[in-house]
Length: 455
Image 1 (cartoon, rainbow, N blue to C red):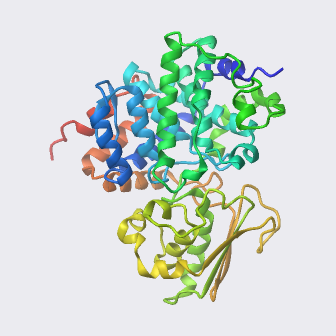
Image 2: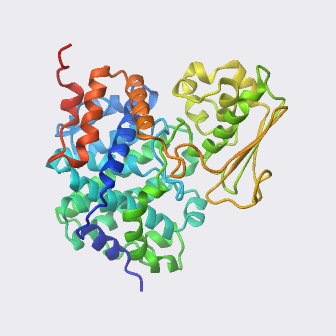
Image 3: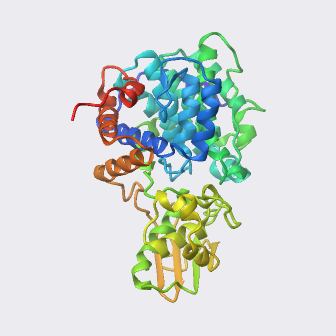
């Protein structure tokens, strides 16, 4: 009989030594995740959430990244997780189609500020959370869970963040089992809300619920210690009722604790990751178009490759991030895909809107160009006239990672979009880059709101 809840709890509570390169890996994730949240400053999602937080939030030692306000850990987790995913620009796990860092860091950084956690402990806890994210998603598996319409980032994210928080707090196995069971009963998040403000809210709610579950369990709140593998538990409800995939869970957890960097993509474009291969292919073709727009554009992707996207014409910049037609049209018309293209002005670009009506997207088990085999996915874009191009590994994927300079440039762009002074942005970048080796987690609020250095 499976003992998944206990196995995950034992894994989270065991001492782990992170590989030497994981401090640098976490520094990149910190820059990207906090940067994406800052870039959302002033967006409709962030503005509504800020108004709510000013009305509802109490005082504490944890920082809301977009305002510098000091609130409780659960409130900061909720605000920061939502903001980090608001532009759909945060990192992604290509193998499991989920966004790990936005959930994990939105939960871990407030905890670190609240209890003065040191950097190496954050690295080890992130390793635990990143592993649980992938091992549980793999065990569901995707065809069952995502295929039913569940948002893996939200559902599995609660369990992953609970494991990470249990690790950083040094909880015992029994308390962690209770926290996992509690969080599993809060798991939710529907693909039907993709393209709306509620999709990023899934991330904030997952981070907040993890903080809540761990705090309640620490105080003695109980749950079924076998909730995940119970007959009516998490895996039976959300995944494969046979539970056969759980047989390999301990090995998968240890594998992904080391190997999660091999399944992490930092996004180059501020749109759903399902559009990125097609954007790259469209950009390859763009130089050959000259000033004329193609009469027809066809996009072909792997089976289920269109599942995260909307099929109808987008009605807002938020929906446009989930529109293959919009993303490919921007790439072909403007030769780049940037934040400015998902503003009101960019959304109403007449040339882009005109080309969108000529774009058709479909799925195929056999790519219409190049070899028949592919791994995680592919995109073939055909423009008539103009030619065709295929991309299997998008720029930013583990196979074609962004350089450190790319990450730093993206962070600077995010900070500029969020209205941060260059000196504040530089100070924040230095703090985040050094956090994985710091003796304690500094207050982000002090960095964001502290006095500027003299000229």
